[in-house]
Structures are given as structure tokens and as C-alpha cells.
Amino acid sequence: MHGISLGEYTQHEFPVAFSAHYIHPDDRPDFLRAVNNAVSAQRSFDVECRCIMPDGDLWTIHAIGEPMMDKGGDHVRTIGTVQDVTMRRQMEENLRQPHVMLSVIKIYGTTEPVS
Image (cartoon, rainbow, N blue to C red; front, side):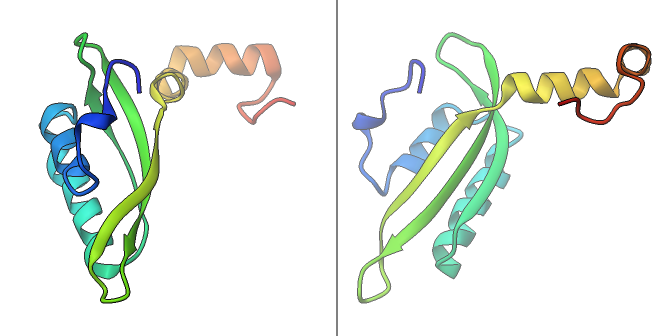
């Protein structure tokens, strides 16, 4: 991801190290809880949180992952993706503003998605 080197972490270190360095402190407990619960339950996780980038920008990310276990049930790695959803969240927030909602209704006659 922009400005973040993933190669510096082992498979086991990545979620904790990524969280310690980049996840917003207020969102860190929920991020780690989602990852740890997924590993414990051997199921996927799907979490959205704020991320402080190396240049100081604040992004909103959507992380999806699935822990991979060996035959003995031990966690050996997590496979997943991290997507920047900052613009989508900002647009959704803007649409919640009454004056923006009125503008959308005036232009399109509805707040439903336009094809």
C-alpha cells in the first residue's frame, strides 16, 4: 500500500505490527480483536478502520482476511486484502449532510443510485 513496505514483517507479525504503526489508536483495539477472533475461530475477518499513513494523511481502510491453518490447527499465515475506501466514506458522509441531500434530490429527483 502507498508508502508501506509489507516485506519487513513476517506473516505472523504483520497484523500486530501494521496495527501498531498505522491503525488509528482509537480503532486499533477493534482491528486487533477482529483479526484475533478470526484466528481463534478459524474464520475470515472483515473490518474497516482509520489508518494514519507515513505522510500523516488519514485514510479509511477496509481489510478482509482469512487465517490459514496447518493440519494441526496452528495459524501459519493470513491471506487478505486492504483497500483504501477513504473517498467512498467521504462521499457517504457528504450525502448525509442535509444541503447535499437536497442538491442531489433537485438534480436527480431521488437519493437512489442513478444508472
